[in-house]
Image (cartoon, rainbow, N blue to C red; front, side, top):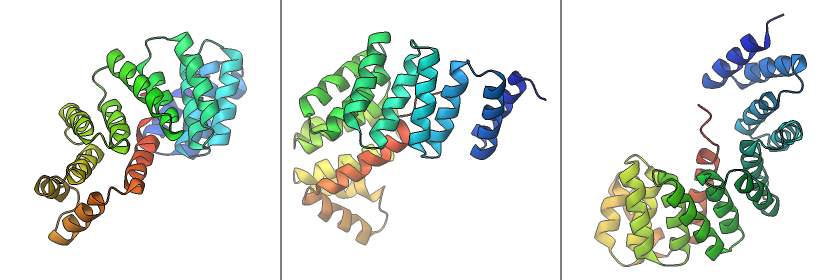
Length: 239
């Protein structure tokens, strides 16, 4: 039988290679040997989250919290899983606890901001994004998320400023580029919108279609891009 250390190393290697079933198998055997190790349950929860098995992820994060009630990252990730299941109130409660444990955790404020955003509580969402950015001004996604709120509130100049900052921090953040084009189109700057969106939708027909949709300020475009970012970006950097 392999030692827990060997199993954990194997599980993390399998995760990096995208072999989630093998990672789960290794974590499960490690947990069998060390059932009271909170981080093993946390790590298995992360894999379930990557597989979009959010109910199982929640069970693992809950077990990790039962073992170590001070494990702030478990509250953070459980909040993400709750949000993916549209239980935004539960997500907010978990973020509240994570913030209680680590008051300077920019990720917890960002996650709570997303939950408030989903509930249409824009003032609270903006306040949390502001705090997240004050705590860590290097996160392109925090500026992007705040820009999305401004876009929905039709504060297009403020949205463009945030998308610009997101792109300064990460020039390859394609969704900031796309929503920046939407914001330009929404204020009638069609040429700028075409130029920006051309990098997302090459070809004249694709660009004009994107601009025409942006000019109509279609809410579903904003929500679609935001939902994609939630799926891709909310999970903490686990190294």
